[in-house]
Length: 274
Image (cartoon, rainbow, N blue to C red):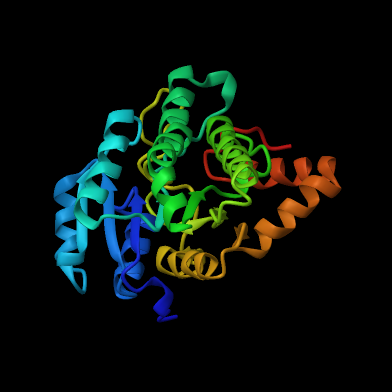
């Protein structure tokens, strides 16, 4: 989809040094957008910028989304360089894998600070410019933002919070031309599970899931672009995600039974097999 609708649009992508964020930056750059890549590792961002079709149209800003001033600086640097903002993609995020009873509470705080507050901070400072351009704000969640995923309490809580925040923002600005999209890719072949936090806050290092048949980050980024082009309110990308959402609301007890069974089958699952 070489859509002309992204030509010269100014698009901010957080968490742009890997996974879906990096794939999205590359896709938008290939469509002729002016891309702002934000992440904690400036060296990685600069390396990837040099691989873009037009590096001069890519701005790299070192950003820790848990720090409000960093998020404010990200928006200021974007305006200083490009003069406008058309799309904000709140993608930066971390995951976790542990039963709540074993979990250090600091792990949940870290997830909320990154996933939820990172989205809130960036959206708050970008909003005046997005309203001016009648642009789009995206929140990358997952099916865990629609159902309580066992062994992922902090992750689900943060994704529920993002969905609630953005859904409310959409209603507040329904007559202002602002487009708000909640984007749920489902399981994606990326490094987020490798960096998922365990009960003590240490990274798990290796994903327990086979990623060979998962949707690639590049495909996810293309679907994000499709949703933005058509100004979708919500996108669930996988059939299992759509089915899960349906059963969560239509048959909640059955949905919970299925969730438990599925997550308990993971290698070294924190859940007991029943």
